[in-house]
Amino acid sequence: MKPIEVLKSPFFATSTVTEIYRGRFTLKVDDLSIDLEGSLNIDLNKRPRITFDGIERNNNSSTHIDMLKTYDIATSEGHAGKVLVSHRFQNSDGHFLQGAFTTPLFHATSQTMIDKTRFHLVNYEETKLGKPILLEEAVDNHSSYLGGINLWYKEWSIQIQMRYDYKSEQIFESLKNTEGFAFTHVGEISRTTNEPYSKEEVEAVLKILKWSLCLCAGRYVGIGIISHFANDSVIDEEFRQEIASPYKYIFNWFPKHRPELLQDVFYQLSEIMKDPFMTLQIIENIIWNIEVSNETNIQKQVILSQASIESLMFLLWTEKKPKRLSRTKFNSLGNASEKIIKTLEILQIDSRLPKDLNLPSEKFDQIKSGPNLLSNFRNSIAHPSRQDKYQMLDIWEKWKIAAIGKYYQEMMLLYLIDYQGEYSNLLKLPEWEGTYGLVPWARNSKNN
Image 1 (cartoon, rainbow, N blue to C red):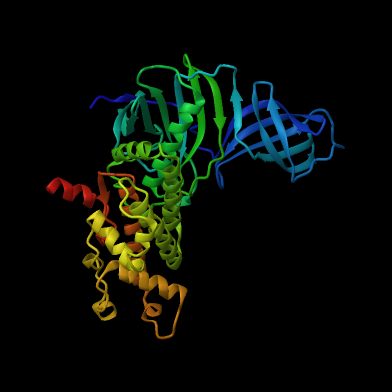
Image 2 (image 1 turned 180 degrees about the vertical axis):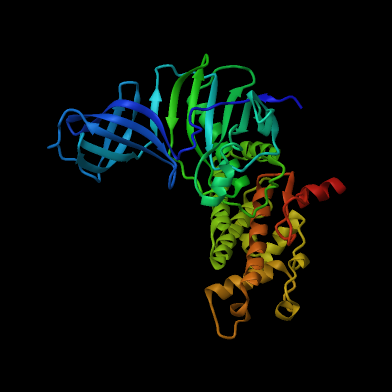
């Protein structure tokens, strides 16, 4: 396998705060301008933020600054955005201002057509089983490392690389220990035809990429810096404060030893997100999935997954093409557990109580299906009773029921986007990771 060349970045810092710009800039306050000298920064300390700090240089200390109002900020080099001022105080150097951006920080030129776009990911998965990447200089006697992913859709080509210093700087070890934030990957987008493109065109690709990453990671993955190039020069740069989840291991469907399967997800989302209505529904249910994956309260996990399951079932029966049922006929399918059972039949998933979970027979001998168990537990949460046996379950038993709900939710979501690849079965306890298979509907269709 031929290695790809490494993508370097000035924003791969060991510190959680990285300077974007240092020098003079102006804060516009009503009709006045406050000249400042200081820095604009990327701050990944508690969450991704763009901040500023500076010393006033034109002694406008009497100018009133409303801490609840946004102001324009700009540098002579073309950086611009809107900020909130959080602190204003006097020190030995003069009046000092600090604050954060409420919009992205833009740095643009007049040129509009682009030939490649580079982006930075905040808190994506460790991809050390990816494609080989060729280093410019050997590190620890190694001239390459594993960590690349190649994606494509029609004329678009995307390359994603785990940062080259991930091992020497112990990036992922630090993230796991602190549940913090870092730029974990850098990537590049271009057209295979080498034709130039506009920001609007590549933004559509970046949107699909973002939600593909989130679905695979089970967390919010941020695209924090976007740099557009023409003839190898940066013509437009945007520093974003996108939502990203704290880094932690997520128990989900994505095979973490097969990072290249991101391609299958990206391709299918590119297809289904041509439809504006389905785009909204897919994003909404990916958000539900992220919320389920990151929720620590088991009862909340069950309620969230049930809400998403109901939405996905309705979409699968009444909106996914070819349309199976009308709204009226869907409502006549029965109660919630009966609808789940009928939906699992479409997905070719066994609805019987999963044997791999080893649920104690003395507590669940009357329960014959996973959907029935899930619905009963959800009803017990909403309507607790002294006689309700579900109130007396231990934490491990509750976790297993929540895992059933999450499994159904993820399988329905993958079916909705027509995913046909491998997955990690959450119900194969105690060890689900590393043992993969095709999704049931793809496996069974291949066997026929």
